[in-house]
Structure formats: structure tokens, C-alpha cells
Amino acid sequence: MPIEDLARSDVVTATPDTPVETLAATMDEESVGSIVVTRDDSPVGLVTDRDLTVRVLAAARNPTDLTATDVMSEDLCTVQLGAGFYEAATTMAENGVRRLPVCDGESLEGIITADDLTELLADEQQHLADLVRAQRPEY
Image 1 (cartoon, rainbow, N blue to C red):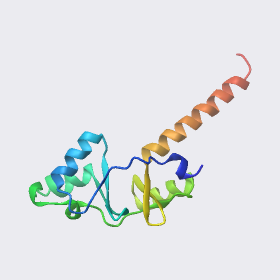
Image 2: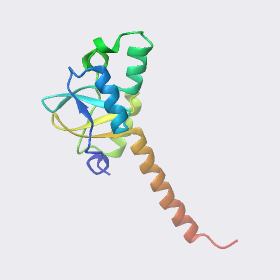
Image 3: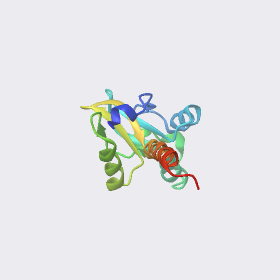
């Protein structure tokens, strides 16, 4: 199944100069755990709730002095629209990430998360279980 069919298109984004306090408030308002940082519609970084915890709170840094650039992960892994489920899962595993911005060339088109992939697998397992139940003999 292509990632294009699975990815969420309503990606929460911010610019590199967005204040950290705004990032945290947006995560709360939108009920998300990450924000893709973009420049001219291209993803350049990712800020997660964990980044805020580790890079701001645990480091005892003043959030009013920080922007997305100061706390974002810049070694961004992405996947193209035409990639498949397996490619996305492999990219996540090989890079130790749980979120992949989905791009069409350089342009951000969506996001796919490990939770999304897990939910899809659970749905597929349920379909398979239903098939097995329907075909097994009565005991």
C-alpha cells in the first residue's frame, strides 16, 4: 500500500523562527506530539514533545529565548509519496525515528507515524483473524 494512501495530509507545521513556547502551545491545541519545521514548504526539521522535554526542560534552558531552530532535529528522514508501507517502516527502523514527513520532491505533502503503521497492521490482523474464524470448523 502506498504511503500516499496512509499519510495524514493535515500536518502541523511551523517556521524555523517560531518561539518554543508557541510550539508547545500548538502541540497542546492540535493534540500532536510533533511539528514539522518548514522553509518555503520544504521540511527542514522536526520538533517533538520529547525534544522540548530534553532540549529545554532537562537542559534548564529558558524557553522564551529559544526558537524551533534551537531545538529541532535537523537530520530529517523523509519518505516520498510513492513509497510503500515496507519502505516507510524500514526507514523508521533504520533511523530510529517514529515520524516521517511525506514529500513530493522537496514539497511537504503529509506525515506518517509509527502509530499509523501499527494501526494499519492491527486492522489487517483483524481482517485475517475474521477470515480464519469464518473458515475454521466448529469445535
